[in-house]
Image (cartoon, rainbow, N blue to C red; front, top):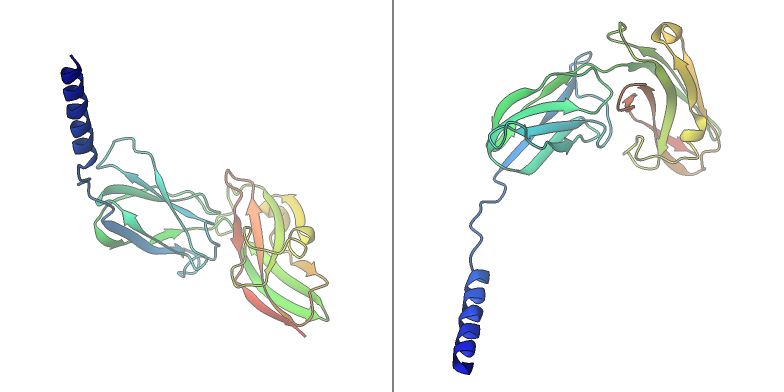
Length: 234
């Protein structure tokens, strides 16, 4: 009986070792997807921030109801992911401050490039800046490319940082949040007006980067932005 038990233990050990030594032959990610997110009003890349917009990917070659993957935008309005699987996808710009768009179906293999064109809820126009001592003022107006049905405008806000990456996820709170203007207004109440944001007490001898953001009361409450300006405080 002892010999039988020992034999069974040896056989089990060999089987376990054999199972553990199997090579994983599943193919890894073998494709990439990149492109630009273009502002329909300017024909240029949209002014956004890191992860201000996402590209939603649904792999239809895998499932009719796939779990989506998301590629975050970069501040310059581009996106890129080199760790995807080759397949047929539905791709959709998602989660940003723009009018919703329908998805596009395409095949992704190798490195596939595709551009999207979207319409922002609002554009920040006629931006001027003035530095007086250590106080920065930003003046601007708001324009809605599509006024009809625009959600209520929540607020306008300066974003200030000490790097060129500036937005809701990258700013100095003491210069940004505390100096916002709450609007809670319809577009009819803001169209044609000029707004001024004041940012006092910037540290001397420093270089800052600033921009204006405005958001509406939709599902995502992301910001439409002005371009980034450099501010050198003597």
